[in-house]
Length: 288
Image (cartoon, rainbow, N blue to C red; front, side, top):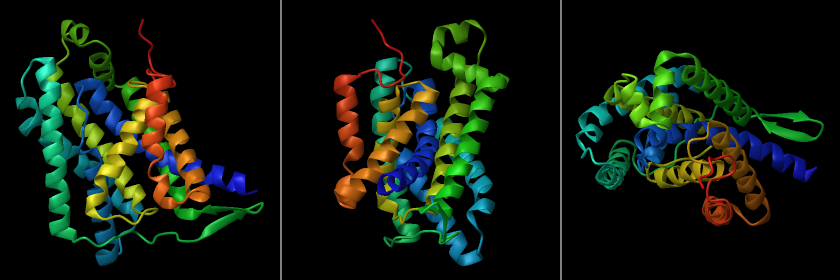
């Protein structure tokens, strides 16, 4: 029964990890930018939700669309004002983007400390649990999992069935081909960075219900997202979801059998193992 409980906990947590990592994957896939500020967006969104819940009584269901809209505006502004000014040469862009997003991570963490202080915050919403055959299912985790699935499905539908989504996929798969077809690459990159940041903010709103966070925890969520993408396979939407479920299960089992503090090492261990044994990830494209 304990194993079943841990599996349930891991899958519920993995669903939220998947949503966060999908935003990271979109930005990397289109722009080849490893966004080191990704986790800080997640944490800042969660802190804003916690503050709004405490001060105004607004629950995460109300704040979720606000977080998505605010994240998109923030991401689009970051690309238009900062990232699009980087060198056009691919190698130079990748190196410069790492430095820029690294500095942006510190800026967001410092701004969060100035605004919210160093205390831990969360949203005490739906604090009970359902009992199903002796298995306890926390209501907040179940709601976060369900909303994450809905948002992930909506994102998949957007990428699959809309013209903008097709342009994003084309740019991710073959930049020169997208240019030859008349795709406005600069506009697509702005849209992609805004979309990836919006997804990160949505994940933060959901995580505010299941985590106690402070503004300095962004690195942990950046590592989680990066590990999920590497485990699943760079550029693979399904792989990203699978990698998140694997990480969620690893987190749940190591927390129970080893301890919560050592469970934080799970993303690093999985990242190393997959990099050594399956460099292309579980569902990534293999190169000859």
